[in-house]
Image 1 (cartoon, helix red, strand yellow):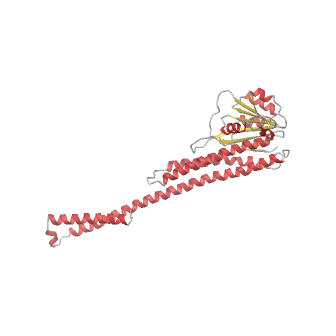
Image 2 (spheres, helix red, strand yellow):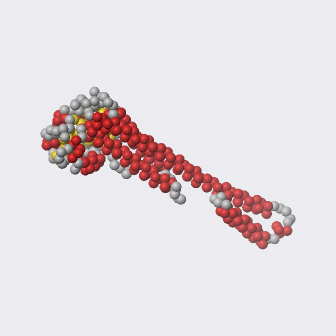
Image 3 (tube, rainbow, N blue to C red):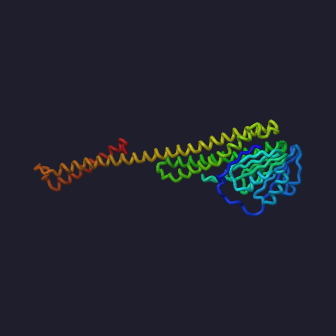
Length: 344
């Protein structure tokens, strides 16, 4: 038995399970004819797909009775049942001989960088695949809508079909990184604007979002590595094994993109720091220039206040007016000269 399972960290975002009856969606993919949608769990469980058929049963928030019936139909061990019904949300993979099950965490679609996850358990038996989840999983609906009319899916083995689902699962991380990069680009435009604003709070949120995304994806490494090992499912055909190995490669790409997202935040923070330093530098330049001008005027005022019997000091109001006008002209000229030289 091959088991890869983590414990102790809640990677799903902490959302509560949906209440109400289970939502069952089942599809029978047939390589020789059109895909059929099966109505109801009872009708799906009594079906016995042939070699050129593949049955997919999707259960949203099933109760214990429905879960037990699915487990009996697929001859699942208790580990697979506990993988869904338990409180552990870390990614896990277990080879049960005739079947295998995998638990992954997909990224919920959200416009904010505060990413949350949705736990999905996938069970694969002979020509049957069951997906179990407590919250809606958007990529399953997209996959169903995209593959509903394609009969070629029926030619896939259950392992290859699981690989396709896991590819879509990794796609949620690629989409999350794309949304994250867009948020970073918008923030950088604001930082470089002529009237920059305080972006520290947004930078803090982006940094937390990047770390959250990495914590959600990183624990999947053991799952995808184990899927690509030759001894995991030696009875699978070569095509399925290639699909498993490709998954590991795509996981590494997703991990690289998530790591790059963290670097983007660091780069944006450095850009913000540089802009803040430039603004502070401009302020210091203005203050220095004002200090010089005021200092020159103070020197002139000090000279005029010296107690010498010079004729100019006896000119009264006329002399005072001339001195004030000259000081104003000197200050204005200094300001214009500073503007011309772009000192501020």
